[in-house]
Amino acid sequence: MDAELESYLLSHIDPEGDYLYRLYRATNVHLLRGRMASGHLQGRLLKMLVHMIRPMNILEVGTFSGYSAICMAEGLEEGGRVYTFEINDEMEDFTRPWIEGSPVADKIEFIIGDAITEAPKLGIIFDMAFIDGDKRTYMESYEMALSVVRPGGFILADNTLWDGHVLETPRAADRQTQGIEDFNDYVARDERVERVILPMRDGLTLIRKRC
Image 1 (cartoon, helix red, strand yellow):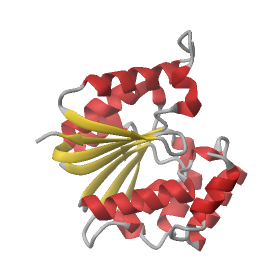
Image 2: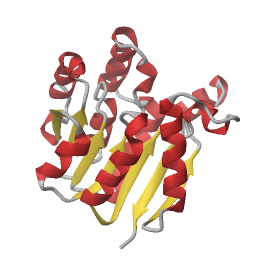
Image 3: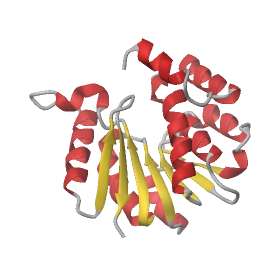
């Protein structure tokens, strides 16, 4: 998406809000690879999808700076909760104050740990999951999410076009690109789900677990 088109889109959707604007700016100033945060356009989409799906329990794999968790929490109805896992404990000092200082802090449970092993231990049936963690373990995250999401529930997976690297031939050598390619191929063949890829930002796959 070129800058002119992106500017047009951002001027015709709901505003980001001051808190998220400041969080996104701080993410890009203080953290490496700040672009990994969802940002204005995807953040408003996540909130809208939560309004549409109306989940009570959301699982997030990969908190990073907390931007997407806050956006999803904004869309929750009363009593809803986002359980967000971040495997990198070095992120905690940055992320926890931003989550706990947000207007939706009471709707977010921020957990340092590996979601693949720890999320099932919560004993919660989730209505929706958002996978945005280590690309090398996307398939493991997906299988875990399928095991804890209810029939008819939704799984969202971010970065599934991976800056177009999924089109490279011969096949990319780095494990992150391979992880995304393997995940995309696996989900495309998975008869347990319905799926569609949205070509926005870096690719967002929407997956519905069949009943």
